[in-house]
View 1 (tube, helix red, strand yellow):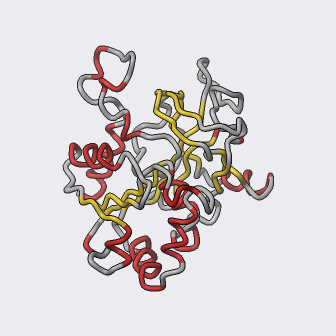
View 2: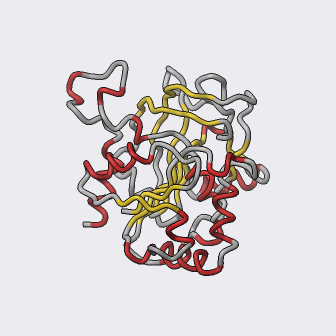
View 3: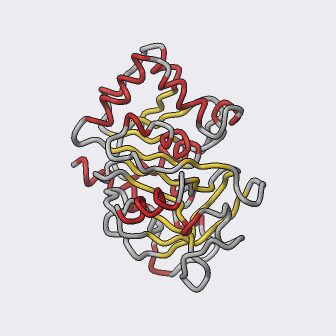
Length: 254
């Protein structure tokens, strides 16, 4: 498992801890290692792109990170080869989600993925929000459909942007939406603050058609331990239900 990071990325330690707990050897892979050829994605069966503010978001959230891949022929080919290999998994969280949404041309079955732009509030939003896991091909969310759980959000540019209503309709009809914001009645919402960024239809995670690549704005790595929650059912034990994402990854790769 490659834990990808770039300058300005955070929560990579929590991410590594979650995957390690699920049984992975989580390896810290900085983009400088890939760009210099010191390591390669051919050595890995899974990768996760972590959250933060790569390149200070000066080129747009995640766009500088994505361009460092797209404009380097060798690294671009390496990522394309990884995404086209069978039996690989990829997860993008927050800044990693924004970055991977800009790699659509390299990721099979991701043509309908949206961009993620400035929150409607025009502010950085950080809190626990309630989301629902929806029916989708995502292998990482397998067995979690219908679950409604709090999760950490922490972003300034998390609003889903689609080309037009037809694009949104296609995204929905293909069943590629993996997580939605819901209110305290469990209803999908576009209303602030239950929906912290104003995304249409409450969308906050999408997956590829194969389910092997999933990107999300919320941070499951910050809540995989029950103690991270201010309240929880007594039967949760030490791990919260979000730990299933990481165990699903291990299950898929055998």
